[in-house]
Image (cartoon, rainbow, N blue to C red; front, side):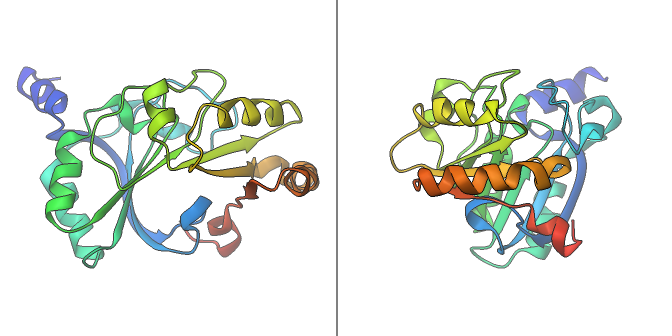
Length: 212
């Protein structure tokens, strides 16, 4: 990598862009909402069930000018519309610059993160999806608006309860079945939520709708 590019990446003026697309948010609190997604490459959390493993190696994704990313978001996002920054793990990178630029365009900015890295950027909504491999930092848990825990097996319910104790009382709590095991774990999630109604169920509705 060129020295000047490395400096720009450290500032957040370049980001390893994997993909960007306009679609319907399929998960969590904002399910059903039109949203522009910006997927940033790079992740070392290493979830074995990750459905975007191609995002893990940031070197496979071109360092892209953040101003261009913002311009593309503006084309597809009306005033006060939503852009979601996801990954990979976006907090591996400096998010201050991109969130500032998006807010200047009157775009609401959401993030989906494991919380494993320090919180940079100014966010209108923080969806924390913690992973056992690399636990979230306290600063991210404290700031989370939404906690979304993926359920792969029965042990994940205990993990979900532990993580819920770390977020604020106003944080929205969601359990989401891991897609490949949904038929097995959905009945378990239904029973858990009926016994623990502070939680809600999140489904990957975009997969049912066959959209990105």
